[in-house]
Length: 402
Image (tube, rainbow, N blue to C red; front, side):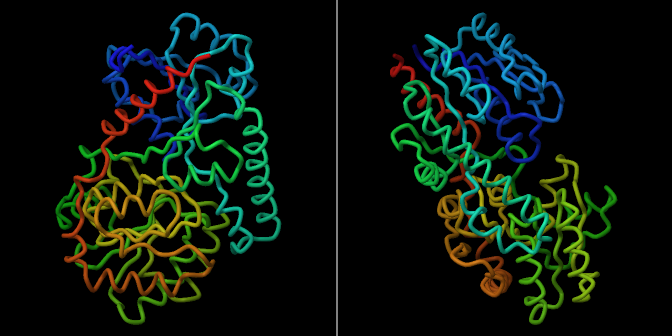
């Protein structure tokens, strides 16, 4: 059967906004242009669905309880009615794992893995959280990793189950967790080049000012940080920024995205202690339609994470032609190599790299035009490119049915 005739059942993540939900939506949209797709989605409305419904796509909504308790009646009905060539999922602990246990079930299942938290388990003991919060957080991480290891024991012997890591490092981490390497593929996340592309900084700043964001200053050198959390290294960035302003006093730090109460408390205290009130601006969650303008209104994007899969922030910032400083986790190094910016990569071999990050930000500010002009945006994969890679893998695994 040719790729054009593939019938795909795509099980979207449960109640997942942010990066994982956006990947699910973008992947569905790209695959639906080339195959017949049934989209199995949670009914809570929190997952970002594609904005249009092509004739090749059918939507089926299923309650959260059906995902979490393996109440599989509706899923069985959809599979029997649709007879998919392949099932794509974003979790292997619930429905997909259950389906592999059904007698005679031979449909290939491809699970997309967006990260493993192995690095986060290593470094989270040092996060500046309260002891109770840190214990709760680390127990949750440990439980997730334990479930993955237990799942690997079962899934390694299932012939029709495969994994796609969103970066080469993710695939390496899956091997550490016990998955057999020959069952794992690597496909880097794409970027919507129709949304994220170079825009004029002044014009973008004006759009944001008119939308009520008075903090945006078109004349200041602005550093942007998206999706703040301890795992994303927000607290390390604050320390680095405080070092940087000693030599570059006219810069600003802009932080957008939802923030936990614990991190918000840390941020507030740090800003007050170091008198950064007029230099650091936390905006909170923003309209996704305005996100491209935030990239373009900034000069540098910084993502100093301790653990990643293939963060959309990095590919979106690079597609917007913004020098992007990242740590060497997940797919970050792959993105920088693609666009010819390897010098903006920071090693992730110790916890407090604030001095190295401050030096890297100063280097980037001092060489801003040179670094921006180096970026080869056309080398970033589009979601259409990503869909083609998935279809090649689908053709490959269909030949392995038993």
